[in-house]
Image 1: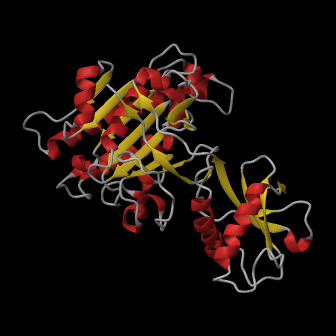
Image 2: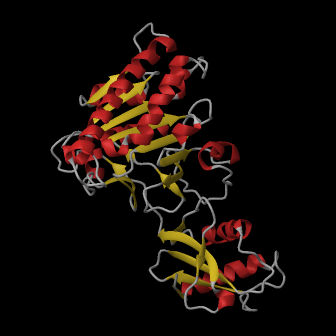
Amino acid sequence: MLGRNTQLCDYITRVVDARLSFLYTDQSSVSNSYIFLEEEFGKGLLFVLRYPSGMQLDSKTYFQLYDIIAPAISSIKTMIRPVTFQLVQIDDEPVEMSQGFFFPWRDGKAKRLVGKIEDVLSSYNLQKEIPIMEGMTVSRKVSSYLITGNTGSGKTEAFKYLAQVFSETTNKSGTKKARVIIFDSKKGAGSRWAKRNNHNVELIVPDKNDRPEDFIPKINSKLSEIIGIMNKRQDALFNSFDNITTDANELDVSPIWVMFEEFEGVTLGLSPRSSQIQDLYRLLTLIALLGRESLVGLCITSQIARNDVIPIPIRSQMMVKVLLGVIDSNSTTYLFGDLSDDIPLPMGGAGTGIISINDGKHFGIEPVEMPTIKD
């Protein structure tokens, strides 16, 4: 990896020198202990340590530097926090400076999308991407979303936004509009919106006198139907097409989006070991694991992603993870491991938090402000 010195590097060096002088009395840029370089294509920052050194290129040092640099440049760069530290080879440097850290970033701050849904979506190609903020989109190759947050964090608005976007998506050729299926045990704001504003959305809600143990079989029956569709599409791809890398766009079929609002309400009061709950978890795991090639997506919201609410096999398959509201060691545990609460967050009210996107184009965890849609 190559880098170049810039004015921003000089500023970052001064910031780090001032802080590290309290931690390493013999380490500074003045003594040529390290240098900062911008990655040659502007994708991030390189920290190059000169050996021998009292510092170590380890996880502790990496995130210590992140915590120093990220707030200092937040007005012009958004530093993305990787899940693990990024150790890279530094090209065209002597052996004593041939290893360093890479900190990914992007220019400026992403900006919240605000407006009517048609205006917000007018600048994007939904066959290729799902907009999250100005400057932040999710590839359509991504098929699973998990949104968590405490009461009042903006989960429902995020859910409504994604339901509206998903309902406007089509297959690659644009010939088949998406089918959206919403499961909502609480008959909350998302399902009320769908009932009154979008006749293309299929709602699965409890009947008046349904108990959880009455509602879950209805959910499992619909999920089994969807998995049957997935299997037929996979069989068709296997039998009729020679391309090794392909998906159900080849079949000219509709995308399907399966959405759960307030997932914990589905299983409330029931034992996770019951056969109905185990069947539900198994079906959702299949959709999360195998849905992408079949054009079947999954979106779940929940106040918390504890293991007894959303099991690890489901959670680990979710390609977009969003945590809204309170960001601390308790709230991040189930989505982001032992992430600290040191990420610089926007002061934007409801719908703000952090996001990770696993689509091959994003590097780690970023601040997020979910869209505000004016009905």
